[in-house]
Length: 455
Image 1 (cartoon, rainbow, N blue to C red):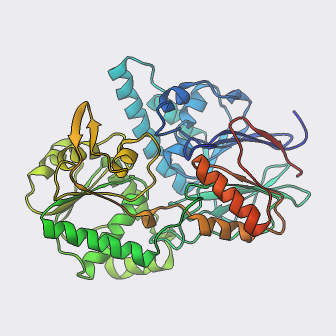
Image 2: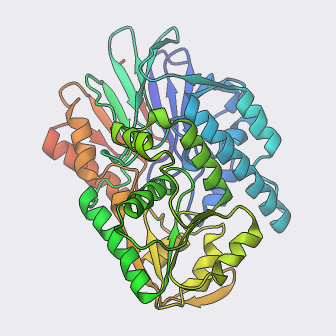
Image 3: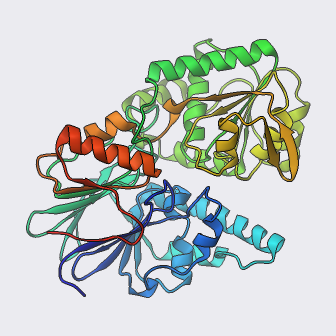
C-alpha cells in the first residue's frame, strides 16, 4: 500500500445519492458511507454492479447517518466479502437496522416480481449488524496511525461528521450531510476549525431555503387553504427525520390553535417505527424541543392524528370525508403508499401535493414538482389538476449560504475542500463560491478520481 494517504471518490459525486468514499491512510483502507444511488434511470443497474474495490480489502466502514443513500449498500458490501468493522453512533445503528430491513424486504419483493437476483437479503442485513460498533460524539478514539473524533452534523438523529487526526496534527473530515440549522428537532451542526482537508455535501449548494418563519407561515397557510377548499393535503415524506419534523410542526400548530383540527394520517409503517426511535432518544434534541417535551409530553401527536400500520387502514383513508392531511412514503414518490394517494388526489383540483424535501432527477416526485400536466403511476396515466407546492425550508440539508459559513470557520487552514453529494450544477456553484468568497481551493471530484493527501 502507498504510504501517502489518498482519497478516492466512488459515489456521491455528480449526484446527491450513493455516497461512497475510499480513504487510504497508509496502513488502513477505510470506507466512509456505502449508499444506494437513487432516482436515476440507471440506479438499479449501477447498484447491482461489483464494487470498484475488493470489499475484503477494506478494514473498516464509517457510516455518517442512516439515510439509504448513505447505508443502502452496506449489506451488499458484506455479502461481497467485507469482513471489517462498521462504525456509527448508537442512534444511527438503530435507525440503520430499520432502514436496511425495509430495503431487504423491498429487494425481495422486486426480485420475485421481476425474476432478478435480490441486491441482498435479510440474512445479509443481520450479518452486517453483527459487525457494527458504536461511537460517541466528542470522545476521541485511537486507531493507531490516526485518532478519530466524531462531531454532530445536526442533519438527522445520530448524524455524524468524522475527523481523522494524524500524528502530524493534520486532519481530514468527512461531513456526510450537514444539517439545516437551526432545525426544529436537531441540535445545530458543530462548528469545526483547523482542518487540513474537508469532504462536504452540496445538495443545496446553489440555492437558499426560506427562513424558519417564512417556512412555518407557508405551511400553516397551505393547510388553511386546503381546509377552505375542503380538499386533501398529501405530503410525500421521508420516513426518517422529515416525518418527525412535520409531526412536531403539526403538533405546535394544533396546540396554538393556528390550524383547524382535521384528520391527519401517518400512512407509513416504517415512519411509525422510526418515530419510536426518535421518542426513545429525546435527550438528543435541541433545547427548545426538549422544553416542549417537558410541557407537552408527546410532541409527535395531537387531536385527530392516526397512525395507519395495516394496509386495510391505509385504503380506508379515502373514505374519510372532508379536509384531511396524509403523510406517506416515499419522499420522492418512487414507491410506497404515497403512490396510491397521488393517483387518487392528483386529478383533484381541491387537493394539494406538498413536497418538503429534495427530489432527485428522474423521480416521479421531480416530475410532479415540475408541474407536469400528466404523470404515469403504476401504468396508469394520471392528470395533474391538484395544487403542487414545495417548501424547501423543511429540508434537513444546509443551504448555500450556510454551507459557505460552515467552511469559513476552517478557511485559514484547509488545503482542499472536496465538494460532493450534489447535482453537478450545485457542486460547481458551491465550489466557485468557496473559491471566490473564502479563497479556498475547492474541487469537484468525478467518479474514480484519486487524490494524494499531505497528512
